[in-house]
Length: 122
Image 1 (spheres, helix red, strand yellow):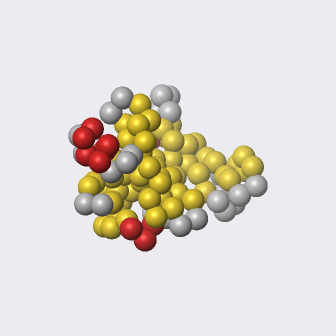
Image 2 (cartoon, rainbow, N blue to C red):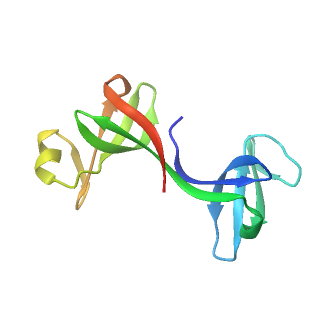
């Protein structure tokens, strides 16, 4: 599974999370749970004070493709959307990456060509 976003540990379980400016964190789960409200089928949410969390971190999926470092920003079937993190335009151009914005280079890479797929906690 490709992850890119906040995760929180609350009462021993890990949840997808979304911090807010009011000192609370919204926790999300796919299964009904005590105190969670269904926001749509298969999506349940509960807000808890940040002080009740055992952990709150940002996680992203990183990898190597064609010898360079990337983060994974999406996936579709057997393809991964990867974003170059090396910061060198000449390398991005050599790899044939799409320029998305100033300094932001991405492409779709076959999952079979991606190496060292791992999560990084920030």
